[in-house]
Image (tube, rainbow, N blue to C red; front, top):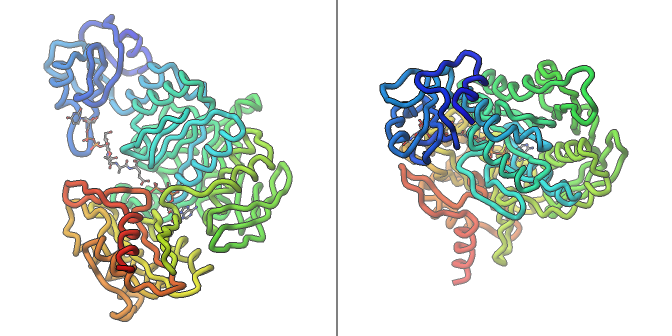
Length: 495
Ligand SMILES: CC(=O)N[C@H]1[C@@H](OP(=O)(O)OP(=O)(O)OC[C@H]2O[C@@H](n3ccc(=O)[nH]c3=O)[C@H](O)[C@@H]2O)O[C@H](CO)[C@@H](O)[C@@H]1O[C@H](C)C(=O)N[C@@H](C)C(=O)N[C@H](CCC(=O)O)C(=O)O
Ligand SMILES: Nc1ncnc2c1ncn2[C@@H]1O[C@H](COP(=O)(O)OP(=O)(O)OP(=O)(O)O)[C@@H](O)[C@H]1O
């Protein structure tokens, strides 16, 4: 691509210097620039990419995209927003890869990862080669790479999608975070199906108010549309949770065809007669393509919602209902999501990624449905993130647990004990007696204590970290896996 071609894609841009320079790659991180790359200077929240232009030039950048002209003798494409330019240029440079894939995006506070795994499983079982991008990793054709963020930056995303196209992937299911929507990371990505799971309090450190958080999610649906004469194979679909209060708002702002799913409110894809046991969940499913009885190995009403969202996406892709039933019935669940830890102990240990008040409430409510003994809960809240959810999570833990151990969960640069104090305020609000909870900063010691307290029939929930295998203290990342720590503690019981 020539710099002049890049400029023609951005209507208000101008070029300072030579326009016919050839661009052989694009990069937003100066440390990764290669000879011939176009370096896009992103003004960030912590540092400004413009300050790294010199390093990019030293590494061989052929030209820059800037919001202000820099004093370097190199062609510069001057734009009003480098973030917007990155999305447009990435999409064009990688030859519009999302238009060659059936793109399914999932947004919502909870359930994105679970739903994406369910869709990936159904599609692949139906021989639709499907790639996945999300919190845990990006994977396709048996290749998996851990991801630093839930939704990649626009440039990285377009590169990934291009790679999928080159490798004969037909469908891509991906998580679309509210941060990504707000920052335009998925601008230019052409989705066929946009799924909404649910919205509840989280990320207010970033979005500040619930209204702004909902509005950020809304961008996903507002950008999706159909022309009146769109070919059926080209139509766009908004798949919405009929039981979530935000459904009417998202319906009102999208021009896509809306398909709803739900349990409590009438919906196009509806579950009824839900039965939950410790081993799984069954329900009756009614859809616009027929009805069927479903069995999930995953527990909880919230997983019925995740399954309904996945079923709806699969029906849009014309997967037969029987095939969907068989795929979901065989799916053991997702890493770190209501994952049972079994080291032969006479009580249940469950590790779960719940890190929002709503997520914690859902998993605890589910446990109450099958717990024979007491419920012991170990959890904490992340440092340098939404502080307002801490007391709310304390309240939820207090409401459902017989004993709560409040501990650390990635304290980052905050004083760990002060995070625990914020959570304790919620426990106190619920007027929990002082002998029904404890603050233990060291997560290993908290898990150890809970394991020692557990009696036969009890359920011990270790919430917050799920699949994560680290703990961030200060700026250091330490190895830490709740599942391994719990197993060690259980083995220690017999010594
Ligand atoms: C708040 C937020 O989203 N920040 C993202 C943003 O950071 P930033 O704007 O501060 O960027 P920066 O680090 O200041 O750098 C600015 C520019 O300088 C460049 N740079 C920087 C250093 C250098 O030596 N050379 C260089 O070129 C960077 O590559 C970047 O282009 O752009 C960075 C570069 O892409 C992201 O890594 C960073 O995500 C941070 C790590 C983050 O924690 N994001 C979270 C909040 C997030 O996005 N989470 C959601 C999921 C939430 C959920 O549902 O749980 C997600 O989608 O992951
Ligand atoms: N549909 C749902 N409704 C409410 N809570 C849910 C739902 N699905 C999962 N959860 C809870 O949220 C936790 C995280 O689930 P999952 O990883 O699927 O969500 P996510 O949206 O991808 O989260 P994140 O954005 O933080 O990665 C689960 O461990 C479970 O406790």
